[in-house]
Image (cartoon, rainbow, N blue to C red; front, top):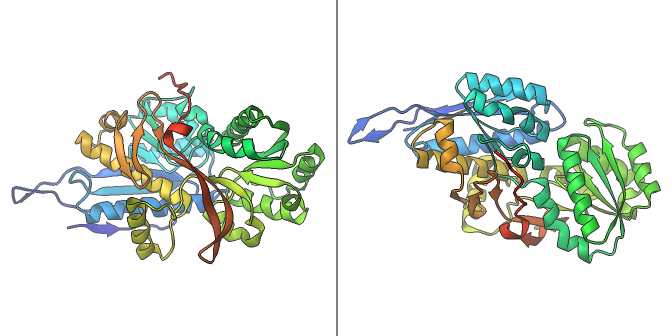
Length: 396
C-alpha cells in the first residue's frame, strides 16, 4: 500500500511516504529514501525551480505507487535557495542534517559548486540535474558529486557541426555573469574558433537584469552576425523581448544554451520563432521509454514535460536504480553503485562515467518552429553520447 502526503506546496516541505515492504507474508518496514530538493522558488529561476519540484514529485509518487524503491518509501523535502550559492549551501546543509542526505534540484551552477566540497563532510550525495558548469565534474570534481545533465562543453561539442556549415563569420556571446554563463561562453568561443569563426565580443550581464539595452547596443557595435545567448528564466524572456524590440533578433542569427526552453518559448510566443538552440531533452523524442513517460506525465499534469522536468526525472531514475543496486540508502553506498554503472533511462541505456561522474548521454540541437500547431523547440540534429563526451579533467 502507498500514500502520498504533501505539505506546503510553496516548497517548504513535500513528502511521499508510507510504503510497506512485504516479505514472507510479514510486513517489514525499511527506513525511507529521503531526498532533499533545495531549489530556486523565488528568484530569477523560480520557474525552473517549480519544474524541478513537479518532476521530483512525479517520480516519487510513481515510485511509491509501485511499492517504493528497494522496498522503501520515498520522501522529499524542498527549501528555497533563491539561486544564491550561500543560501544553497545553508539550505542543503539543513536538509542533510534533517536526514535528507541525497540532494538534487539546484539551478545555478554556482550553487552546485558551493555545496560540492561539503558533501563528503556532511556525509551526503549531490546529483546535478541542471548545473552546466564544466568544473563541477571537471577540475572541482568530488567523490560525492554526480551529474546526469549535459555540461557546457557537451553542448558546445553538439553545435560544432552546425557552426561549421553556417555562413556567419563574426560571433558574440551574451551570457549571465555567473559560473554557468562564463563557462558556457568560454566553451562556445573555443568551439567557434575551431570552426573558423571570429569572436568579436563576450558580454556578461548581471542576474536579474531588467534593462538589456546597453548590452544589445554593444552586440550591434561589435559587428556580430551571430550571437550565442546564455540566459534562462526571467533573464531570457527580458532579453529576447528587448532584442526583438531593438531589431537585434531580426538582424543577426540567434542561438543559445537554455535560452529557448519550452517554457521560455511559451512566454515569448512569436518572438522566439526561428531562434536556434540546444535541446537537452524533448517530450517529442520517440522512444518507448520516453513515450510512456510523456503519456503518464500528461495524465497527471495535462501538459508535456519540459526539458528541465525531463532531465530531473532522469536524475530520479538514476538515483532509484542506484539505491536498488546498493541495497542501501547510505550516500556512500549509493555513490559506489552509481559510479561506472549503466542505467535505463527515458533517453535509453546510459553510462555514469567513473572517472568524473558525468552521465554520458545524447544531446540535441534544433530551432523554434511550429510543431503540431504549437510553437516550440524542435529537434533538427542529434549527437550521440560518443560525439559529445567531454574530455576527462577530473582529479578526485
